[in-house]
Image 1: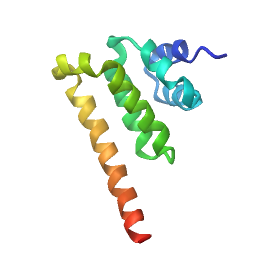
Image 2 (image 1 turned 30 degrees about the vertical axis):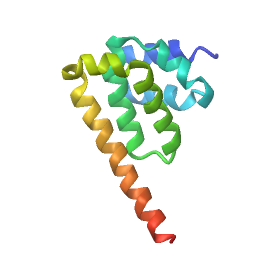
Image 3 (image 1 turned 90 degrees about the vertical axis):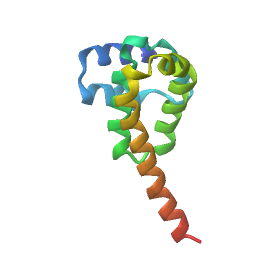
Amino acid sequence: KGKYGMALLMSLHLNEFALVKSVIEDTPYESISAVVRSVGQEHLSHLIQFLSKCMEDSPHVEYYLQWCLELLQTHGLFMEKNRGKYLRSFRALFRVVQSRYVDLKAICDDNK
């Protein structure tokens, strides 16, 4: 209880989508920053892939965008220096974020 970082690392190590999604969604909004800081560089690619998969059909857009923001603020420089290793997973995340943006933009434009 309260050890969200450890739970995420263990679930990433097991590489099981349902478990990782459960840990991500059970993490309180205010703890996201600390949890992202606890993720090592060896797990970044998997975490990005899991986030993009979770975000595809989740109604919790702001919550997952906060995960993305914290991930980029915390590990962005490292990922940029090693961009070849993270390019595939980052593109998947970008596609999902862009898709959600297009969906929300259409809804907002309809409300005008």
